[in-house]
Every structure is written in structure tokens, then in C-alpha cells.
Image 1 (tube, chains in turn cyan, yellow):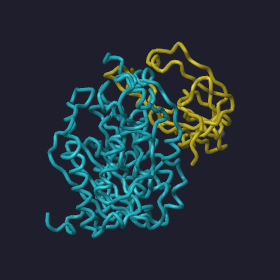
Image 2 (tube, helix red, strand yellow; image 1 turned 120 degrees about the vertical axis):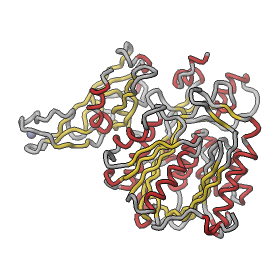
Image 3 (cartoon, chains in turn green, blue; image 1 turned 60 degrees about the vertical axis):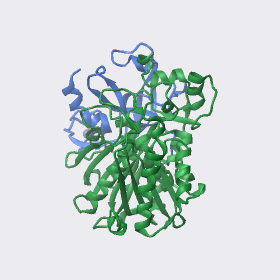
Image 4 (cartoon, protein in one colour; image 1 turned 30 degrees about the vertical axis):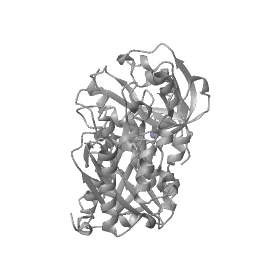
Length: 356
Length: 133
Ligand SMILES: [Zn+2]
């Protein structure tokens, strides 16, 4: 497209994030435990440790807690929420929406839309884009979008080091009530077979060397560059940036390619400490960044989902952030609340015994 | 598993919705439609804050059907901040770390599931208050 200014995704009515909430389960599996199990502890590891959900947790229960945090920050009547949308690749049911259970638990039913979204690791941000459109068109006063996963890697696969549990809920409403105004977003999508899971398969498969340049970097750069060009901005105009985090290295390199410093991505770079939370990855980086951002700050967020595509968003933080921030636990509190587990306990928690 | 019975209980189970007596103001959980204090009809819904403290507890090593995979786990009588006592499983805490009077908060978790193909039942549990808000 030649005219990116006109191709930016913008709403008729100004909208923003009016509430946000994170969730990270408390268990952590150190990457050294995985490496000890499969390689005798030799070789490097892509992150320090990853978050693992407990036996009684799944995308439903985790989404409910994140949604309650978002509602506690927004302090709105849940009956005014006209859409509850959950993006994940680990919905507990293949048929029966996660979103109706979440909507029921937060008191948003029955006069609401509900749906589950899927697009590998960008299911959360596409739900967010849809929520922006829903509110921005005037169809809804509030719409709740959630990116949440309990990701699994095949035992012994490289993904087992990083596939993690966590995510965030983002409540969209009018710009007048917002803690961060949404300036614009931009999506960039192609058919790229870098990672997939067939309908009845328990674990995903991936195209090994296919994952870097033609997949992650191409789409992240495509979406980010078009958004920045359309807004006539560069990295220097932004205080903070968040990129999808399959490991620690990819987002650092994407940031560098776009001209962002390590300091700009540091607050939202959570993968070294919690792993890759898939559909939760970009949005929980955003909640961690909102927890420390100041009024007037500009934030860039770019998700990535295999298959493949990226959604890029530009936010401007408002004064309202200062009043709202402390009404719910911060992302960092969830990250520091941690209990280490060993590989044997992990196996029990993730029901992997049947693979042995 | 009786799907219909679990479905009828979902509101009280997911978000601790009970009742309040319009006559004397006593809060009821679980909802029973009649006030325990003054016997007046009490059908007005009341959503509890989910805050409370451990009143008594016991650790389960020999679990009933559907709960085997969670052993050992702790079941507590929780005194809600609004008054009622509720029996619930504790979560996010090791059995040896539970104490009488420990402040807890409600979370919605998986309670049980009807095998790999059946319904998943979600409901309230309580965990120690460790996060600030
Ligand atoms: Zn009464």
C-alpha cells in the first residue's frame, strides 16, 4: 500500500484502554531443569525460568482473575460490557466458549457478546483490535479483550524451555475515561507455515529455521514500520515499546532493528522471567509497561502470531493512569510471587505422564 | 455428573453471590431464600467481597472421586468478612503453611472435571492474600 497514512486503522470515535489487569500463575520452572532433563545440563538456555499454571488453573480461571483486575481498575458496572473476547491457543474446551464462562464470572451476562479468538500468539491483540472497533463505532460502550495461554511444548522440544502460562485483560472504552488513548493500529499478515498444531494433536509442530526471518521479524517489522510511517514517527518519539516475546533474543533484536533502545523495551520484556505466554505475551508486556508509564508517554506494542501476522498499536498514556494503577495488583507483583518447581512436579502439573 | 445441578449453582460458585435479608440486613451464603436470623424471606442478591479468614481447616490425603489428582489439599471453613462461614478448598498454599486466622481472598478455579471428555466445573476457592491492591 502506498498511502500508509490512510491505511492506518483508526476509529471514528476516540477510544482507549479504560482498565487493564495481568495474571501470572505462581509456579516457575527454571530452564536449567529442562536442560538437565534432556541434555544433561549442557548448552545455553533461551530464558531463566517460565511460569507454570497449577493443577486447578486453566485459561478460564486465569482470564477471570485478569478480567477482575481490569474491572477493579476501571470501576465500571460489568453489565455495561457488551463484548467479552478471549484470545488463546489453549482454550480448555474445543467446543464451548471460554468467553461465556468468563463473562458469567465477572457479571457481564446476559446482554453481551462473547467469543473466543484464535491466531496462535496474536489471538489476544486481534481480540483487542476488534474491541477497539466495537467501541470506536459506537456499537458498545465497553468491550473486554483478553490474551491468555497455558502453552505447552512437546517434552524435549526446544519450546519446552519457554512455553508458559499467563496473560492480561484489556478493557476498551471511550478516550475520555482512558488510562491510555489508542492512536492507531496496523495489521500485517501472510500465509507462513512456521508453527502449527493440528486439531487433535496435543503438542504443536514448528518449521525449525523457518521461525526467525521469514516469520517473526518480517511480520513484526512490516506492522511496526507501517504504523510508525503512517503516524510520521520514529522510535525516538516513544518512551516504551513491547514486542511479542517467544524468547529474550527476538524482541531485543526487533527493537534494535527499529531503533529502540534496551531501556525502552525493558519494562515490558518479561520472557526471561516468565517465558513465552503466547497470546498473553504482548499484552502482559503492555500491562507491565502501563504499571510504570507516566502521563504523556507514548507506547508501541507489536504482537506476533504464527501462521503468520502482527498487530501493531500506538498508545498515549493519560493523567488518569495515576489514579487507576494501584486499584489492582501490578504485573510485577505477580512475577515476584513465585515458587520454583522441579521437572517431576512440572510433569505432574502439565499431565505429561501419558506421553512417557 | 449432574450437568444441570452444576449449571444452576454457577453464579454463587463463580463469584460468591449470596443473599441479603431486607429485614435485618444479615448476609447469607449459600443463598437459602430465608433469613437465618429473623426467618424473613431473603431473596435479594448480594455479591460478597471474597475477603475472609481461615476459621478452621483440615488437610485431605484420601480424596473423594474427582479430586484425587489434587491431594494433598486443604479444605477450610472460611469466615467471610460479611459474616457467613463457607466451606471451600484452599489453593496456592502448601498444607503446612495454613494457619488459623490467616487472611484469605476468593479466586475462581477449576474444582473438578468429569474425566477427559466431560464438563469442567469452576468455582470459588480461597488463597492467602499475598498481592496488594
Ligand atoms: Zn433477617
